[in-house]
Image (cartoon, rainbow over all chains, first blue to last red; front, side, top):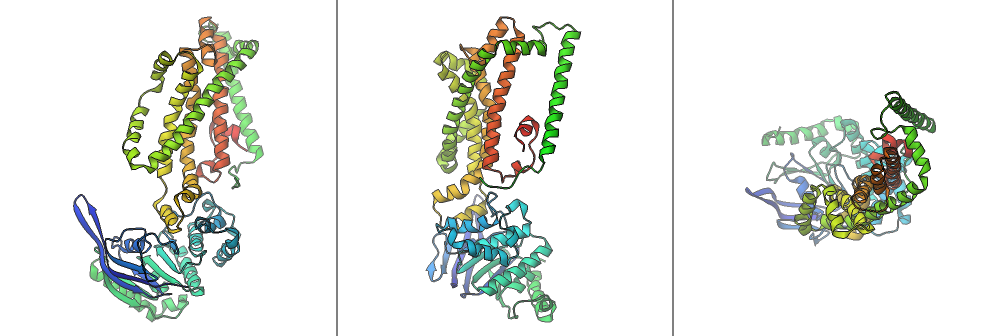
Length: 255
Length: 275
């Protein structure tokens, strides 16, 4: 199951001593059910802000966001969220961290243990179910965070630069994991990133956002077959898209 | 609580560490004894370890009784400080009003040397056990409150957002995430307070009391028995170490997952609790 997300004239304005800062918007965007959509933009453009507003974790200054046809007014609870880091708890092993989601939702841990183990296996962590976060590499920790965001089978996944804190090689591995997990069970995904390659590899559609105040500059459909293998990523179609998007950022004066 | 084994060092390593430490201390005691005899140092300036040992054995009954008195005062005041300090820290952490009022006040009061309050308390409340417990409470309360506030307010933003996104209520969030996340910093306060506890008890016994190790030291010195005073000091050190060691063990048991528990502890407490 997956759900659509719609944004209508969404704005975020921060008030500070030196006046109001127009951080984002107005944003109008439809994310169709089951699509993998990336919000791509330079840092500070408000893409993470938008993601947090979709999650109901940040107030919307103006406009409306609907998830599954319902206006977001409080934190969404049928959602899987992955942040850049800092989200595993130190006192639980890998399995316990995945099941924390279930326990926090007030469901029975035992009902989900098998599924949690299966998820961990699917990202190569079957041997690490009883290891603690400090015994894991950064990539393993983030894989655990993916499993935790998927354990309750939410119809919407929100990811805020989930690969941003990882080294280049690990990042590439985890992109593959993410694509595979998503292909097994397509859900609506809103994925925040500032990596163009990452966006092109993973997305059905890329929403390019301008520097602050963040506005949608272009929506780029990525019609490449999946899984997007190493060979495909070296091919012309893929590289052309990357170059095209890069040129937009050159246009902004960002790069 | 089940968890990873924090001590990587094996039993053999522990035995070697303890033996080295014991030899080191014994050598110091021997040097002390030799120095006192060789330089003929007057007993009221520095008693020989042998004289201290003799006094310790001769007065073991009284030392034991007074250790119980001081232990009771220390533990009662310490427990009271935990019972008041931790809930108050929680309230401050979650109440913007208290954080603007009570918290800065507590930080300011923390700057007052609590020892200076001992005569005031004795004058006001007399020589009974109450003011001694009050003194211990005072020296234990502030580290617990201040570290407690820090502990309950330092959850990472991301983890807080994760909790909200699960729809868990405040109670479940507290017991499943906030409390365990707060324990390491909470223990910083509990350990600081444990060190202070015997200090508070001793000082108030010295100023006005009729029992306890602090009182005994004053009496011994009044009788020009420095060797006995030193013997009592040893008992006092043992008591302080026992209280601190118990807190360390509790910490080991409750937060074996924390980074502070993965590096071997240094010092006597580390040697005693390792393994």
